[in-house]
Length: 301
Image (cartoon, rainbow, N blue to C red; front, side, top):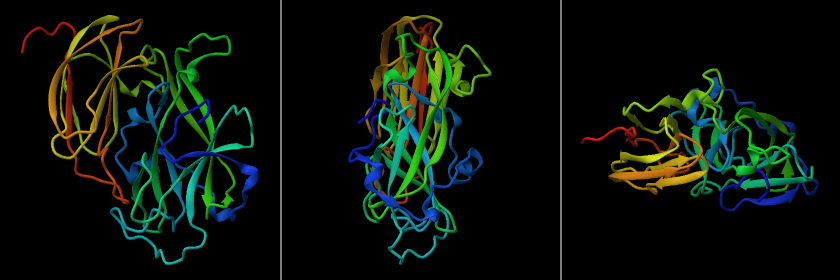
C-alpha cells in the first residue's frame, strides 16, 4: 500500500486534502506505556517494529467511538450519539513521498470488526485503546546506499482520526523503535527486551503478544520446536532474519517440529499472536499457550 507497511484488509490510500477538518476534540490521545499497561498487560518485547515481520501499532481514541458499543472490564459512556464517530485511523510514515497521501484503516461498527484490528480496552469515559496489525517491509532497515542497518532506530509516523468518513483530525506524531539486524549485541538497546541466549526454557503466556529472540550461537543448524495453543486459537511464527521458518497457523493445537535454517544471522525469533481468531468487538481473552525452543546442542528427548 506504500513503501512503509502492509496494512489490514480493507485499508486504502486517500488524499488528506479530500477531507474537511474534524473537531479538535477528535484528535487521537497521546499514548504512553503506562496508559497502555492499564489497558492490557503488554509484553514490551512486542512493541518495536521489525522489517519484514508482523508488528502492532496502538491508538488511544476519544469516546464515544464506533468500536466502543460494549465494555471490556469497565463501564462505557452512552453510545446513543452517532455524530462525531471515529470511523477510521489514518497513518502517514515519514519520510513521505507525497505529503498529501494517507493510509486509511476503517473501523467497522458494533457487531463486526476490521480484520487486523483489535479492541484492547474501554475506559470508564468511553475512550478506547485499539491495536492494529501491520507488516513492515525489509526496506525500512536499508540506507539510501542499499546497505543494511544494525541496531535500534527510530521511525516517525503521523496518526489521524477519521470522523464520519469525511473529516480528518489534527495529526498526532508518534515515535516507534525499529529493530534492524542484530539488536541483541547491545543490552542497552531499546529493542533488545526480547533478546536471550538459548537455554531451552519454556515460554508460556496468555492474552499478551510476545516476541523472543534467541542467539543460537551458529548461523545454520537444525533445532527442535514444541508448542501448544490449547483450545482457543493462537498463532506462533518462527523467523530467522526476514525468512519465516515455521508458522503454526491460527490454531488450537500442539505439535513438535524440527526446523532447519542457514543464513548470516544466528538469531531465531519467535512471535506469538494470541487470540488470532478473535472477532468480538470488545476483543477476546482467556487463551493460554506455551512454546519451547530447544538449543542446537539438544540431543535427547
